[in-house]
Length: 178
Figure: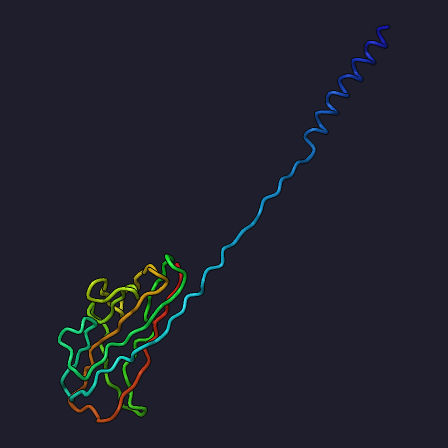
């Protein structure tokens, strides 16, 4: 009888530990993965920055506010579009001096807060414009209504013996989602 009792006790203990071991064996669960694809950011150049006629040894400025600009100049502009409400970082990655296609260079200074600005495309510079220095600032801008306008100006600095001719160069605006 003692043997039977010992055998039954051992059997019960083995059963209890075995059930517990099976209960802890494995487990799993599943979840859903999602992604929201937003509209790509797009930069489009509009009006070309134009310093008009420049006289040797006389600097000529194009302010984005239009204040003090000569009648023959044009403020450059870009339009940045993307997903409404998202933010983009703006940076001018190419602010170059102008060349005449040969060996002559016309220095352009872009290092001033009056030389770049942004505002919602549905607004205006006078009401909504924010000035920034295109040479050293990389502002983060909210795409209100899905777009923002960016203006660019600068100062042409011809030398005393600046060669005559038409000078051109490239200005590149880069917009990157944050």
